Image (cartoon, rainbow, N blue to C red; front, side):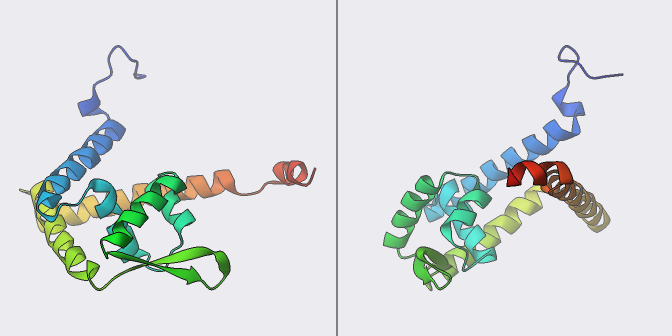
Length: 165
């Protein structure tokens, strides 16, 4: 049966469930972050910099799905707080690469502990096998969408012609 707006049940729709779980995870983690006085934008930025330290601002804004000017203001505040350092990009003198400061390291370590608590809450009652299976399935979903996006953006003979004019 084809889904329709009339009989749509978000609790029976995989995409809706994934979105809801992601939202609830962010809320749970955000509650845990309150004691560190971190906003969601700040902790998402710190965790992204932990993973991609040395990234410059434009790709980080894309990764965080925010406007570059919004990220610039956020980074200004985080730099003033001593959590982030901007260094000149050796490949582009107009750009800066971003790094965590020594002051940010214990904050990030605490965030990892709080993230583990959120994961424990998320997977309460799961066996080790359940966790592993969930990870495998989500990785496959991510790979599927990443590959589909790459195919969609890959140049084809038709769009190569139009790109050259």
